[in-house]
Length: 227
Length: 241
Image (cartoon, rainbow over all chains, first blue to last red; front, side, top):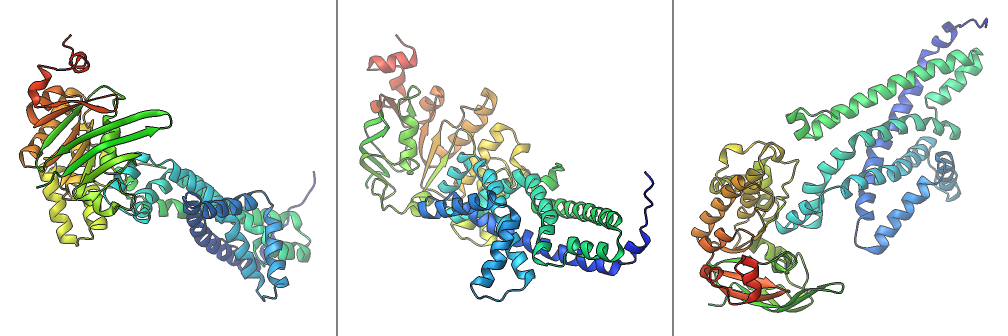
């Protein structure tokens, strides 16, 4: 064991790292925001009484959850090209991540919605609320509250999984690392650095989700309940 | 004037189980009717049919002018006119007392902020809970939660209130405070249909009592009928054999 760590050359490339971090953050942020919206709508769709809607949402979820993210990314990227749409690598990567996260979010959110006591929904119906109003005022917040830790974990996983987009040439943190190591020949140091950056990013993401939870779940904040 | 609730030969099955087997009775505006009977006699299903939480298979059901037995009945209008309180309170846990009560007026009745606040506070005043406006349901006793549930229904300003064994989950002390609120409501002229196991309450407050058995109205009469049952089944039910 006589390996000499040599971080200086690697750390000299900090502007490149920074570029990679920026892209990873952008990709993840877009994917989390829109993936959440997709997941929420699909969860409502899957719970719908309209058979074709419930079925299509279910098919989407199953298709995504039973295929590798990398394959999904390739399908979106090459699919757009084959259909003659010119989309940037960034757009294709973002779209693929949204589609992927949407399916996982759907299942988590659906579990939360299913756990809402039927009596509460009945009570809301008896207050003359429409289905959509019941989702908005009665189901949504408690459902999300119940599954929030699982949801936050899924979002953090997405941040990490976004590294796969480097495979279609997205210049994210992982892609940047690959460039740096080929220039510095310090692969071990490069990937250790990248790993530490991912840890910090994940940690920051968790803090952010925790803060969002405090804002959204007023009851928890007011009663001082922890997640 | 026609009755506010008309139930005529109503039938309902759950699979092979006949739950309602030709229920018929009327309720006049301002009347308080207690429904008693053994578990499984169909009283809760009958009550839930009145605001269409259960769909009936056969018969005619008219409530506040809405033909509930008609599949195209306007559910929104029906439920604005008919309030219901459940055994298990069913308050919304993420909303404060004030928000629970205000949801109906604000969202379903689309009232403005000021009017919603006025109505909600008036409703909470009727159940003596004005001092609990900003607490969450989990911070209340069962009796208080049930009173909030009553206020939540009242805030819709319904013409009829349905009560489905509302004190069954409460100890005798808490039962007392909920029954007190219901008695006040009855005295205020509210039309009430009350499924209950509280015989004393039924005798004292109700204008008439309906004894249900095997999915039918077995006996109906004033409070005194409990002291002088006409049928063997009611005699057994009240323990006078």
